[in-house]
Image (tube, rainbow, N blue to C red; front, side, top):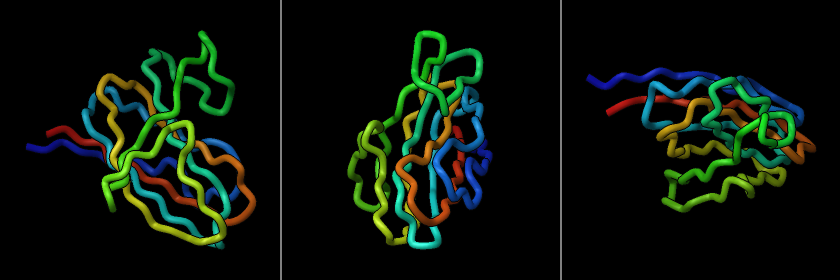
Length: 129
């Protein structure tokens, strides 16, 4: 039986910042979708952590705030997107679906940077085979 659960990380977020921290240790796979409105002009990055305590994804990375930006795979064309680069939207709304390797991760989140316009909703489905 396939075990899965869906979370909303961001809902109509229209400013820089992070969404809700998602505890993902009990799962092996993550499929992330996002949808934008309002001629989105921003960059979205996905972050993960193996830390026992929930990291502050809005603060700088450090030995006491362990996380990194994660590579995702675009399920439209199979291309890999570097975690430090993220997905940039330049005034055009989009709906996208990605896969993120969460093997061994404990936490995940999304971070909206370089925001100038629009709003974004990010959802994640965590599942096991």
